[in-house]
Amino acid sequence: MWRFLFFALLLTSCLERPNTVRVVSQQFLPVNYSQSFTLASNDSEFQVNYLLANDTQYGPVFKKARLPKRIVVLSSVFAGFIEALNASHCIIGVDRIAYYSHPDLINAFKKQQIVELGEESQLNEQLLYDLKPDLIVSSSALLKQTALMERCKQANIPILVCDNYLEQEPLARAEWIKVFGCVLGKTQAANNLFDTVAFNYNALKQQNQLLNIKPKVLTDALYSDAWNVPGGKSYTAQLIEDAGGEYIFKAFNQRFSYAFNLEKVITLASDADIWINMNRYASKQALLAADSRYQVFKAFQSGQLFNNHKRELPSGANDFWETGPVRPDWVLNDLTWIMAHPNISTDKLFFYQKLE
Image (tube, rainbow, N blue to C red):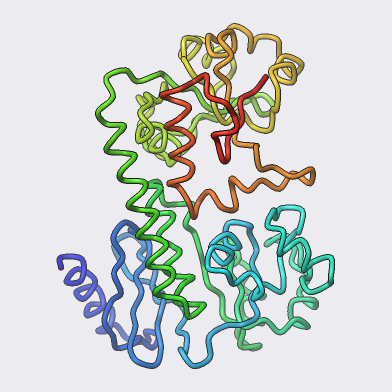
């Protein structure tokens, strides 16, 4: 109830300002975890609104009788939400097909039913306009291209911004499925799916809170000369904690990543029990070939190395980044097994694989 009143107050304050965009007169649909969006709805239309710095920024309005059927997505993350609602047939354009792992999209591309448009910063605009999409789904980075935004406006191509990566709570990130449910006319299916995800996730989380022994967990690896460590309040740190682990860098209690050198990581984390998410390394030998100093880590010596590349394709596309944000319960299930049973067979894991 407090959430409805809070958003109602925001809406009232914004309506009093001059030159505001049209606002759907409505009720707010339930949003329980995300702090980034609201969904306003009435009988004929709905609107996505974004919450920025405790204020409301009004997003696109969609007529329920004319929902998008031809969609361009500029990240595999956005495709993952659409795929989860069995609507991948609506995708007609992507940035680079090599980033996508869903077989339906790959097959559609081979049949020339999906077009590559290039990165957000280098879109092939002519191809985009020729496609005549009903909707583009992108991050807010696309909004900085003011000339492109103006041309899309003139062409009546709405932009749906999905910055779910800014959410640090796994269930908040997954709750964006409700936005896609509205866009695709699958509100009930989206709500049902999210309810299942939240139930599974919270059940595992509560179970893991009862554990007395929490293994210390190290993440990532060197990239060039920097070891980018997720902060102690990050999405990754939250998943580790909810899985029953102790994130070894939890004292660095920000959401952003910290760039450390290898020597500092060795000093702070050489005694970690488990090591996960080490970039694209697929074997212990590959780690050693990159830097022999990796062998000083306790997790390396004991063989407790797990990477999220089990569902990675030869192209480099990784379903961990496509389906994982939609199904954090599956990610948490993998990590729960890894924390509690470090000698587990990879066969029991969905996204993760033990490095040999």
